[in-house]
Image (cartoon, helix red, strand yellow):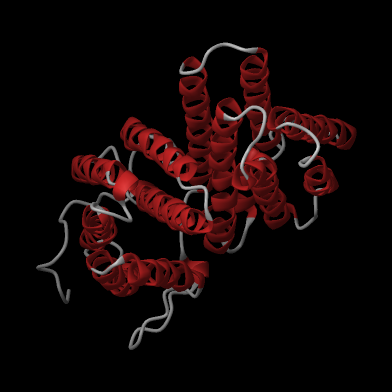
Length: 397
């Protein structure tokens, strides 16, 4: 075989492993622990940079963190993390992700170089490892990864050059880096001389990627508890702080209800039925879930804003109070549409109600506005339950 000298001799693909090929492994959960810290750093950054420039920087950071995590999830969907070479690779990736996380606070300052190098090492290193692991045993997958490596390499150049230049140049270059990777994935990594990799050939295990995405939603919700809890204990107890804490908890519970009771199971079942599982997973999880995660992170920022300024929030804080839940619902609406090809009127109505609630912003304090947003989420969850029961569907979809 051509190129037989290259590649890992041992077959570490997930579908050839013994036991349950859909199982989420403990080493994957270990990798996820790093992102608990990463999301708290992200929330802190957004809270401390409540201006248009900070919003743009925060958007770049959340897109970068999500892309690192979801790209690693695709790799552990193809490769078996229980095999020693893959397990070792995941541990190394977790360390580099930790370096990435500790660089977030100064990612547009003194540690831009550290953030960029860590990101590039994660993307290039993981992709190269996948190519090496697949080359001898699945040439079609290996050729897909070569296409991916080409685009990751182009993005890496933008990351590194941007980190070396002042902020006015860094921002557009890092935006371009993300655009390269996000757009390349949407086009099947079309590469000069190789063409594109038909998404129909992207083989994957649906239950695994669905559970991994669901676990990241839980991580984001857990991060919101950390941010809100630390902000609460740092303040003197007052009626406003207690109301904010209770409201934050109820909002998190409502988001859990909306996501897990009304659609989480649908993902794995839809992928199993689909003739093009790769296309469905790419849309529903690689792209749509970004809005779900971003919405939860923004809500944690809003909770901290309400605890810090219960009587009068900044414009950015007010936008976070209503925009976080709205962004979350946009993500869940799109997720359900991709899976079921229908719009969930309850969630669409919730987005409309949050938009209408913006009229209250000038006349009510931030805490009251936060309670209104929470009640809207609770109403959406309750309405979804009624619809599910009437349609005779089981919990989870």
